[in-house]
Amino acid sequence: MSPATHDVLAGGARAEVSDRGSRFLALVVPAADEAAAQRALRAIEAEHDDATHVCWAWRLGVPARERSSDAGEPGGTAGLPILRALQGSALHDAMVAVVRWYGGTNLGRGGLVRAYGRAAREALAAAPRRAIVAAEELVVEVALERAGGVKRLLRPPHVELLAESYAERARLVLRVEITHSQELRRSLGDLGAVVPSDAEPAGDPR
Image (tube, rainbow, N blue to C red):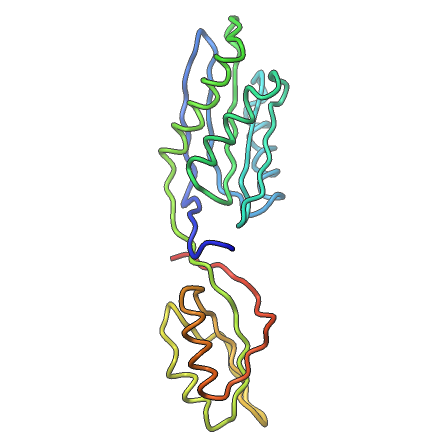
């Protein structure tokens, strides 16, 4: 079951660490979906085309879909520690890319894991965030004389009216935060309102 709230980025952030001559620049960027994450990654690769590696991880959606890449580093030494840092931050809809410039000294598997993970954690710690409140959209049909009763249930920003139309019956489209959904449905039932069972999920920043 999806949480009632989850955190996303309110903006980007960066951090840089060094280890035995190698530089690791971590960049945290918002990504609403995989296409946005890929565009951001291509832009980072183009901006830092002199880098030795651009390793990355992302967490998209709720529940989170996760991917990572070592981008030529030994398996499990870059993408995975970046992803673990991202998981530890509990952020969604975010990508972290860590750009490395090789400094001439091999760091070994452990050194790489520590450097990539540290750079990602420091950038994530500096990243501004905001909460997204999970919500659903309800289409409510009710007798015309009871439409006013439905409107009296509105409690912005928790229950909001998105649209309304009137014919033989009133039809109102409501945006309802998940934490208020059950109570609202009971009240609608008391009014004799009909709510389709295929409500669409939505998200709204608060």
